Amino acid sequence: MSKIMFVFGTRPEFIKLYPVIMEARSRQHEVVIVNTGQHREMLDNLLAELDVTPDFDLKVMTRQQSLAEILARTVAPLDDVVARVRPDHLFVHGDTSATLSGSLISLYRHVPLSHVEAGLRTYNKHSPFPEEMNRQITGVLADYHFTPTEVTRQNLEREGKDPNRIFVVGNSAIDMLRYTVRPSFRHPVLDELGDRRLILMTVHRRENISELGQMFAAINDIAVRYGDTHKIVYPIHMNPVVRQAADQYLTAPAIEIIEPLGTTDFHNLLSRSHLVMTDSGGIQEEAPSLGKPVLVLRDTTERPEGVAAGTLRLVGTGRDDIVREAVRLLDDPAEYARMAAIQNPYGDGTTAQQIMDVMDKVASDEGKAAAVPAESSLPA
Ligand code: UD1
Ligand code: UDP
Image (cartoon, rainbow, N blue to C red; front, side, top):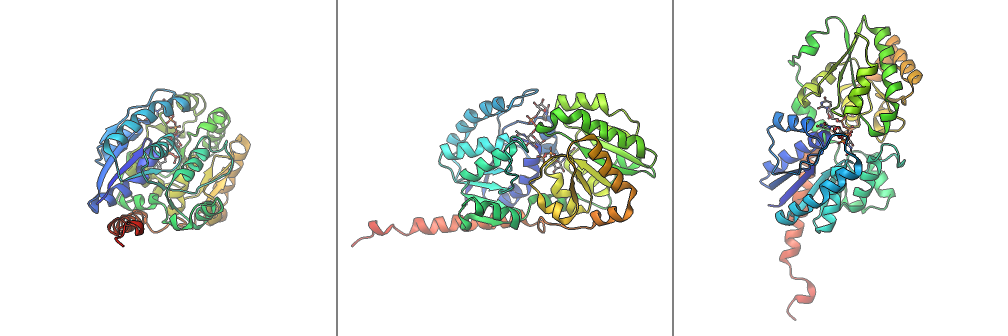
């Protein structure tokens, strides 16, 4: 059995590493969990919800932290933890600052690195920022690339990664939906809807911060226009800059801003929503699997599978563009039905199992290699 370290620091990394952690535990691996603490409330709530207690918490979060600060506050403490624990293997997920820190330390401490959700690309280093470069750098450092789809596999191959180290395993977000979504789910948000349809929104991206005024103005326009028949619910990010802009622009009565939700609540509300408006990455994976049309409030997406499937529409961040696309969808039932056709480009919810199958094989091959003396050391 191996000693496997999982390093993460934000909400989406934990949500999508959770199934892998559970699978590793079920196979009796020694699991060591390091939370960099880049997120605080938004992650602590989920850890409590899923009853996970990290072995280490680096407590790096500060209010309105800069990217340089996060990295600087993470790297040395993480190095210390890895030096003490001496894991056989280190896992990171996605594209955050925690991902980058974990990847760097795996290099410095010579620990084999697995990257989950590898190979997503826009090839635009400013969008999403800084995630595109975090994942490209991690891709360079990783020994094993667990990639969700054929499209993302091809990205990695084009970049010259060893094809024998790339594994198409789907996205563990789908594993998570299998844990969370229940037909019997009840929630006050649903009770208070009455006859109205639910539009679920989230907005948080760093590169969208300067666009928040026009994005929120568009959402307010939509709420005014459709307020009799629809309600927009926004579980808001903890970022104070986002909160301030939301308070200023999202004033229509048909908008309800609520605190960040637990994963079970969020996934179930997503499954009951009529339309989603978001700049999130993970929600672009979850929504197509639930047949929910998404207006992606970004200029680029590294998830073209959902666009090809028809569930995602990349609308940008301009006020007129967002309103026009929402009107098109809400006024045209045929267009809505086309987008809502359920397609799941991200696998069958067995991603964690597939990842740990690979890990077990790697460990067994390494064990066999270690058991056979190298040729030069064989007795003559
Ligand atoms: C980070 C990730 C982003 C991911 C997002 C998920 C990086 C560079 N960015 O962006 O890829 O999409 O998480 O949500 O890693 N805050 C709190 N409490 C919390 C969390 C955040 O108060 O629990 C506030 C703090 O003031 C913090 C700010 O939000 O400074 C921004 O958090 P940060 O992790 O820097 O950026 P995100 O936008 O969350
Ligand atoms: N999510 C959640 N509670 C919320 C909003 C989102 O649990 O209030 C989940 C969502 O289902 C998805 C993930 O958080 O799995 C997305 O996180 P976020 O949008 O913060 O990050 P990104 O995916 O953009 O990196």
